[in-house]
Every structure is written in C-alpha cells, then in structure tokens.
Amino acid sequence: MTLVKFNNEKNGVKNYSPFNDLFDSFFKDSYYNDSTLNKVPAVNIFEAEDAYHIEVAAPGLKKDNFKLQLEKNVLKISAEKATETESNHRKVTRKEFSYNAFARSFTLPETVDFAKIDAKYEDGVLYVTVGKKEEAKIQSREIAIS
Image (cartoon, rainbow, N blue to C red; front, top):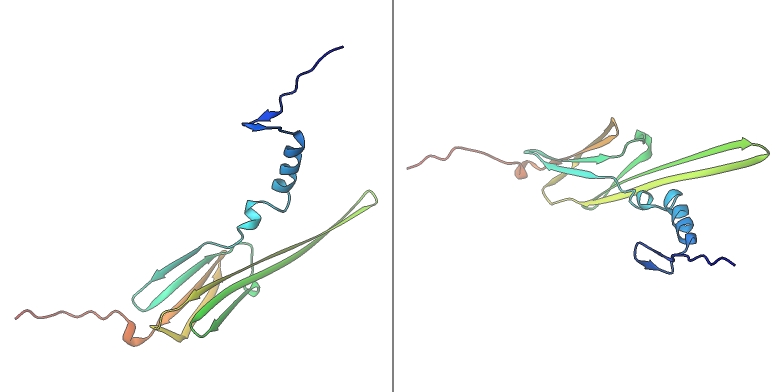
C-alpha cells in the first residue's frame, strides 16, 4: 500500500480544494468578472470661460445608443447596446445575448444656460458642451491704480 500526502493549502488558504480554482475560473473567465461589474465609462469634466465640457469615453457604441436627458438641474447621460449572436455547430445550437448599459448623472450649477447644451459623438468619445449664462462668464478687465 502506498500513502500519498496531499497538500491542502495554497497561498496560505487551509483546506484548499481544486474545485475552488474551477469555480473561480468559471466566474472570472465568463460573464461575471471585474470588467463586467465596472461598465461605467470614465468621464473628464473641464471648465472653460464660456462653458463646461464633459467627455465620456464610450468606444464601440454608436450615436443612436446614447440618450441625454435634462431634468431640472440634473443632466443624465445613458447608453444601451444589445447584441445577439447565434452559432450552429455539430447539432448543437447556442444563442447568446449581450446587453450593455450605463447611466451617469451630473448636477449642473445655477450658472448653466440650459438652452445651450450640445453633444456630439466622435471616435469613441461623447463630447457634451454645457454653456454658461452671460453673467456667469469670466469677465476680465484692467483695474486702474490711483
């Protein structure tokens, strides 16, 4: 009779089981991983003399996927994209659905002119320009010294 000793410890975890690796790899390599949970795109916000500029990084989308809504002083930027793939191999049919969506909301200051909000989508980036009211624009003048 031969005795085989198993090391049930991996990375300091006692009672380690190879099933843990299988379980983890299934969820990490399939749909439920960190990149799936963090589908909110990165945003850059700049203030210029006459407007605020918002840049939303959203590659792979089309202009028609976006929806911008203004409700009171909250600007909501959202997008939805649904895809469907189907493959037929060896008497097995597989149909997969993919649905991606995000929404970001921005509270706009009182200095915003709500009639001057424009957006364009170009090269994977949504550019939103929010104009300022005339009285909110940075006014510069030279002050005389007496």
